[in-house]
Structure formats: C-alpha cells, structure tokens
Image (tube, rainbow, N blue to C red):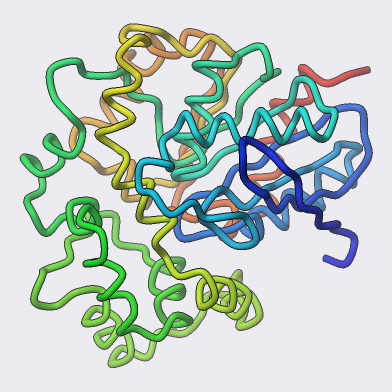
Amino acid sequence: MEKIEHATVRTNGINMHVASVGDGPDTVLFIHGFPELWYSWRHQMLSLAALGYRAIAPDLRGYGGTDAPPRVESYTAFHVVGDLVGMLDALGIGRVFVVGHDWGAIMAWHLCLVRPDRVKALVNTSVAWFPRNPERKPVESMRATFGDDYYVCRFQEPGVAEEDFAKADIAKLIQLFLTGRDPSPPIVPKDVGISGLIKLLDQQQVELPSWLTDDDISYYATQFSRTGFTGGFNYYRCLDLNWELSAPWTGARIEVPVKFIVGDLDLTYHFPGVKEYIHDGGFKKAVPNLEDVVVMEGVAHFLQQEKPQEVTAHIHDFIKKFSSP
C-alpha cells in the first residue's frame, strides 16, 4: 500500500483526491461506488501496476478527500463525468481503460456514452447499462416495483437518511454493507431504519470474512466519520435529474469495447428482468461491442474486494488485447 501515491487535482471547479501507482504507457481508471472510496480498488491497482500499467483511482465528488459541493443538484452523472475528464486532462492523460463498480459503473457507462473518445475499453462490474426509458422516471419506476421502503426511495429526501445513519456505529454500518450476501432488494422499513438493521447484525455476531480486515473497515469508517454520507446519497437523489438531462441520448448505444462482470449473489443481478436482459440479447443490443459477460459463482456485490485476484485477472485478460505494445 505504501507504493500508492496520493495527490489533489483541480478539476471542474472542485479539488479531487486521486490515488495512483505504476508508470506504464497505458492508464487504467478505476471508479468506485457507494459506500466506498478509491480504497476499494487497492488490490487491482497494485496488481495491474505490477503488470506494467498506470492505475489511478479518485475519490468521487462527495467522498473521502474530494470536495463535496453543497447542492444536491451538483451530483449528476454529467458533473462526475466532467470531474473525470478534467482530472485526466490535469494529469496529461488522453485515452484510458475504465473499470467501474456500482455507482462507479453508472458513471463509467456515462463516460463512455458522452466521451467515448477518452475510453480505450471498459470493464464494468455489478451494474449493467440500461437504455433510457423516455416514458418513466427511474425513481418512479423503483417505487412502483419495490415500494416506499426500497432503499433508493428512502435515500431521496435530504436529511432523512443522514439522520438515520447518524444513529449507527459507522464501522458496523460499513461492515453491514460490505459483507451483505442477500441478493433480494434492500428494503428498509421506516420504523426500523438502517440503525435498526445494524442492531440485528449485532445480535447475530457476524464475523468479518477472510477478504475484509479490521484495518479495511477502519479506513472506510475514518473517512465517512469525517465526511458523512450526504455526498453518496446525493447520487441517488440525482437519479431523476440524470434522466431529464440525458434526454438527448435517448436511443444512443455504448460503442466502446466492453466486458461485464457480476456476482451471482449480487443484488443488482436479481432485480426483476435483469438476468433476462443480460443474457437474452437486450444488453448486447444496447452495448453492441459487449465482448464478454462473466457471472462469478458464489460472489456478492463487492466482488473486487471479495475476489481480488480473479477480478484482476478478468480485467487484465480483456484490456491486454487493446494495450500498447
């Protein structure tokens, strides 16, 4: 870990914390999700640097060492893509390989949608690309499918989720997220809340899995104790705004070469209709250069931490086809 360097880059009106390692001719940009940080990619960064790549992983806006603008509306996919493009410009990097997970996967899809000229190839994990539905906003669709207690719906009103999370021990909260293996849709009853779910976790005396250490939990907890979770919640609060702003790209396809990886215990893989969409041709239609889909057996949502060597191998096997000689 001491090999990883840290810098602050000015981009798109904010200061962005960027972790980096390696000095190869090709750069791999790693984009994290919720509730995560650059740190989620620590294993892949070190391994790919050893294989001759330059690996960079920022904290996205609202997370860790990166600025957190106060307005909810400042967390759209277009703001984040602007941050990433500006960061690459500031670092003197042209085209990159991109690897995303969770919300980072959503940002990676949008980067490929609006700036494919900056992307050599994409390895995305957990969240597939779904074409924009011009008839219905995403939060409305989720509420209709899962109800008001669905976690995305619970995160919508500013201040409410923050108040609930503030009641919880942050280290236990991070453990709850990272070690979850229930692929059913996350439901958070209003009268229970996240803090109530953590009390249930305490009663079960759940031990950390072998791939997650107390030091790992401590790193996340220290950062989120300082920043809070508002930045991360604001990505969810901009779902409908992203939908509005992306209207000009209705019907547009992702044209860069893509490999997609998901765990078969990932909750995103079990949303209604997702398996059929991924495997029965819908995904390939929206992403015509989708070259490979990998479903990792017995693996849950945070696959890059749960199975670091396997995920690194999947990334390298794909990007080496497009790498500089």
